[in-house]
Image (cartoon, rainbow over all chains, first blue to last red; front, top):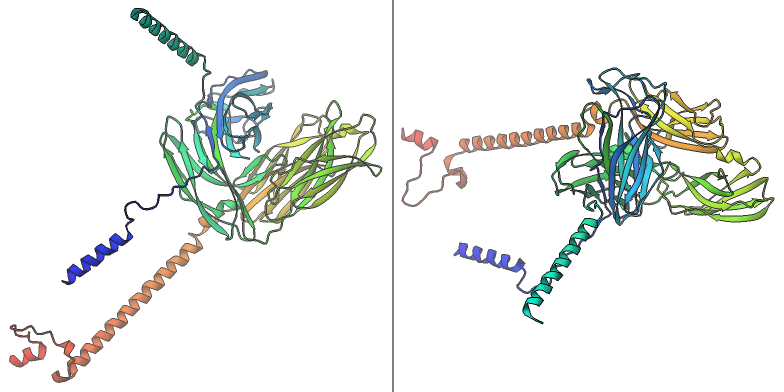
Amino acid sequence: MKRMVIFAAALLAILAVMPPAGAADQIITASIGSSVTMSTNPTETISNWSLSALGANTTSGGSVGVSANVPYTLTVVADKAKMSEYNTGSSAYVSGGKTLTNALSVVPVLSSGTGVPVASVAVGTSASALAAGVGLSTDVYDLTLSQTTLITDEPLASGRVYRIVLTYTAAAL
Amino acid sequence: MPRGSVRTMRSRVLRILAAGGAALVALAPAAWSAATGIELTPAKIESDLSRRSFRTDLLLVNHDSESRRLALSVAGLGHDLDGTWQFLEPAAETDAVDLSTEGFTLASLDRRSVRLRAKIPDGKRGLYAAVLAEFSNAFSADATVVVRSRVASLLLIRGPKPWNEQVKVSEVSLRMPEKGRRATVYAILENTGNVHVYPRGRVEIRKDGRLLATVRLDGGKIVIPEFARRLTGTWTVPPDLTGRIELTAIIEDPSARGTGFFDLSGHSAGRAAAMFSALRASASPRPAVVATLANTGGVAIAPKVVLVAIQGRTERARTVLPQPRMRPGDAREIEWRPALADGVYRVRAQAWLGDRLLDTRDVGLRVGAVASERAPGLGRLLLALLALLLLGLVSWLLAVARRRREEKRRAERRAPAAERPVAARRPHRPGIPPRLTGRARAGRR
């Protein structure tokens, strides 16, 4: 008897909290937050860039795409002020090693979208603006890397390359 | 119309439509899919809090056709004079923001939430930081240029009031172009308050007390505490105007005022420019700061470089280094070895030409071990002690209870059988003889 009473009470409690058929509409709310999307593909990592001993050297740096629903900025920063001697065997920069005289430049060109790139950026260890956009679009920038060498820039021994790491960052304005 | 001709016409129309469609597809530009890359949302969290801590979720989505390995980090947030974001690592803000994960692999078309908990650092009224999600393509050991990509979520948080919204006009001046008379009028505002602001204002230009022009500055730009920003406007200098002019910046939101002078006669001085192409700080083996200053203007300059190490809002070390003459295009490396105690600093480099600020940059520096590396964490030690105390307390309570039970039992044994409480006797069930306890059993023997 006691068990039947307990069971009945539990059943009534469950029924009380269940919404009856034909209850009020379910309310769903959603929102879109500010968003920035960046693509590295096909931004390329450059290997075996053969630099001439004197003059301007250019190579494709691939491209970077930014999709944003808010105004955004695209910046570039390097780990070194100039391309520096790197030991491929130990995977480390050579302490006190050689560096090129001039800084590497990145030249962005808008290939689609509405963004506004700068003319050219000499990369450094402080972030520099590469492009900006008003958002609500996908902007694609083709990148060209330009490195001017001088006759005083020294060639490197086998197993050593001049290297630099570029970091592109997309952020809301 | 005969049936055959209708069929022929229909098939002809279909062929034409098909051809047109194919042409449209062929002519369509090679499209970059709008849904490509790594998405981070929200891209900016700007909020005024009623408390000093908060939590929220960030969403990362991989729109690429292949999986991506993401590395998450937290950096301090600042900006240069032109408003370009500077992500400062390390920074004191790094310890104020905690992420539920430092990295993961996100499959193609997959999404993942990351929980963020943050608190406004002690002694501050706001939190200015960025969460960075970094990803990169694979590269070989002999790669010449390695590319990394990041998307950022900015945190612009103001804590409970009262706030101190204040800016100082560091400089008001004019920059003449190489050719022509369309000059850039600017005012450099330094945020001396403790929360970010969006100042706006104008510059009034006078000569001999007479108002020549009022130039509206491009306001509504964020200025973060302890950083400076240049607001600009343009003014066409009248062709017959020479001599010295006075420029007065009148700023609102918050209010500030500043005055500067410019001599139009020697306006080539307006083409003086310099910038820090590199600013690095390292702590090992001893704190060292290396700044590379480049003359990016059209005239030779002899600037003064000011290097400051700031902890919180306190300057811990400062040096002023006058530089010898630099021709246009010259770059010079400047080194400074400050004596700094363990801690996290922001190192600021400024290049001055007289009272004119040419450039300012910041970089983070951590000296000594991270607080959490030095000791397992004061918090964790306290928790461990508390746990031990609780364990001890529980053990003591149990021992006390056990002792009382034993005493009670002994007291019951000593008491005559008739006085033993009923509960001491086992409950008797009808038809079943009660079990004999100790004394009764002994009596039977």
